[in-house]
Length: 524
Image 1: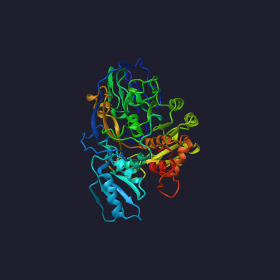
Image 2 (image 1 turned 90 degrees about the vertical axis):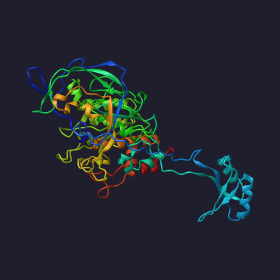
Image 3 (image 1 turned 180 degrees about the vertical axis):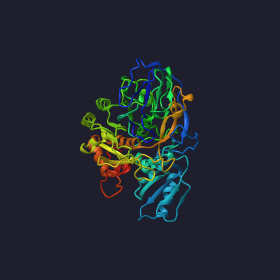
Image 4 (image 1 turned 135 degrees about the vertical axis):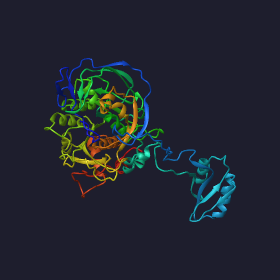
C-alpha cells in the first residue's frame, strides 16, 4: 500500500456475472487478458488545472492565481554590478585625498564619494567604462589595499516557481541556502522512484474492465466499463521524456510504468520537480534523472485486471532492478504494517546498498491505529546506507500519523492537514476529481483521465521520505558517493528534536541539508 494518510488502497470487490463477490485484497488480480494496449503514442498536451487546497474528491477547492516570485542569482555576474562607479580602499599610510584625486584622473572620473561609517571611497567614473577592468587597474596600484565593482546583492537562491511560497517544507529545511551550495545536482545522478508509477509519458491506452465491482463490502456496485480508451500525459512539471531512464512496470510486466493513482507522481515531484522555471513548485534535486519503477497497484490497476499486485516479491524485484540499472538513490514511499517479516525485501535493500544505492524508506502512518511501523523499514537500523524516515508537520512537531519506532532514524517534512489546510506537502499530480471517478456516485462513474494535473497537498511519511532521497542525490553530486557515508553525513548534521539524542519519534533528528552540504560537501 502507499504510505500516505490521504487514503488507503480499498479492498476492491469484483462482481462476476452471478454476482458472486471476490475480494482482490491480498489475492492475485483477475486475469482479464490483453487488458492494457497502447492505441497511440500521440496525445494532447497535459492540462494544468491549478492549485487544489484539499486532496479529496468531495471538496477539491478552486484553482487560484498567485503572484510570481522573482528568482535571484546568488553569485554576482557581469551585469550584477552598478555601472559608473567602483569601490576603492586606499592604504592607511597614504594621503587619501591626494591618492583619490590621482586615481580619479587616471580613470577619467567625475567625483569621489565618501560616506559615514566607512574607510573606503566610491569613485564615480564614466558609465561606458568597464567596472571590472577599472577595479582591476586600481587594485594593481601600490597605494590601494583593494578595489572592486559595486556588486548588487540579492536574496539567496530562491526559485521563481509561483507556488514556491506555499512550500513551507523547503523553507523549514533551509533549501535556498542549501541550493547555493549544490543547485539541484545533475543528470549524472539517477533517483529511482519505486511506487505507483510516474506520469512520465503521453499516449492513449485501451483497457478492459470486465466485471462490476464494489469499493468496500456493502457499498454500491459500480458497473463494468468494458473497453475504454484512456488518455495519459506526462506531468508538465517533471520534465521531458529524456529525463527518465530505464522505466519498468512490475505490475503490468512491461516498460510502461503509467501512474494510475497519483501517489508516485507526487513523490517524484518532491525528489525532482522542475525548479526556477516560473511554473508550479520546486523539488529537492531538480536536475537529476528519474527512474520510474512501478511496484504498487492502485484501484484502477485492480479494476482493469493488472496481472500482479504489490506483493513483497514484486517490491523486491523493483528494488533489485533499480540497483542493477545504476540508480544511486532509491525512494520507497511504500510498505505494509500487517503480516510477518519481509526477508525478500530486506535482502533486496541490502543488495541495493551493496550495489552503491542509498535507500530511503517511509516509517509508516499508523500512529493512531496501533502505531504499527512499516515492516519494510525494519532492515535500516542494521544496515548503513538505508534509513527509515518519520514525518513532521508544518509546526515541525511530529505528525499525528507518523509512527514511533526503534527503526526511525531521521525525520523530514511530511505535512499535517489536520492542523492546517495548507499544512501538507504540495506537488503536482493528477487532477483527482477526473482520475478517481470511482469516488463519485455510481451514476457519475466513468473512465478516468490521466492527462489533467493539479497541485495538491498530500501528507504522510510517503511525503517525508523523498526529501531524504533528494538530499541524498545532492550529497552524491557533492562527491559523497557511498550509501553509508551519505547516511553518516545526514545524521551528523541533523537537527536534534525531542529528547536529547536519538528517539523513536524523530530518530537522530530532522535532516539539515544546508549544514550537511556545507560540512561535508566537496564540490562547489
